[in-house]
Image 1 (spheres, rainbow, N blue to C red):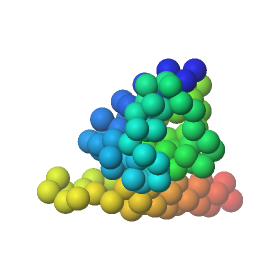
Image 2 (image 1 turned 180 degrees about the horizontal axis):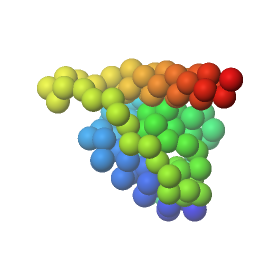
Image 3 (image 1 turned 90 degrees about the horizontal axis):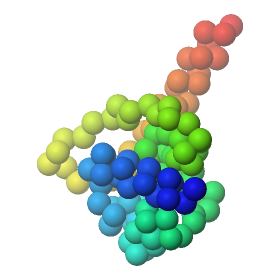
Image 4 (image 1 turned 30 degrees about the vertical axis):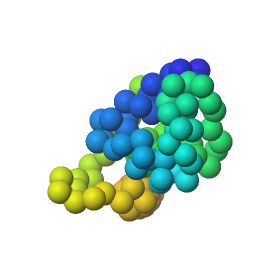
Length: 108
C-alpha cells in the first residue's frame, strides 16, 4: 500500500511541476521525509493526507490507490512565477466548496 501511495504522490508532484523542496515546505516536513514517503519507506498522518488532497485536488481514496478517479487541477499559473503551494491548495479548496454549493443548489 505504501508503494502505491508513494508512486501516486511522486507522479502527481512531477505532473504538476513541483519540486520535493516546494512540497515538503508546503507540508511542513523535511525534504528527506517527503522522499521517504514517495519511496514507500514512511507513512504520513491524516493532516498531511488532507493537505496533499487539497494541493493535488484529489480525494483521499485516489491517493490511497482505492480509485482511479482524479479530477485534473484546472488552476494555471504563469510559468515564470514562483508558485505558492498554499495558494494552490486554498484555491482548490474554494473550487471544491463552489462545486458542492452548485450541486446543493441544483438539488433544490
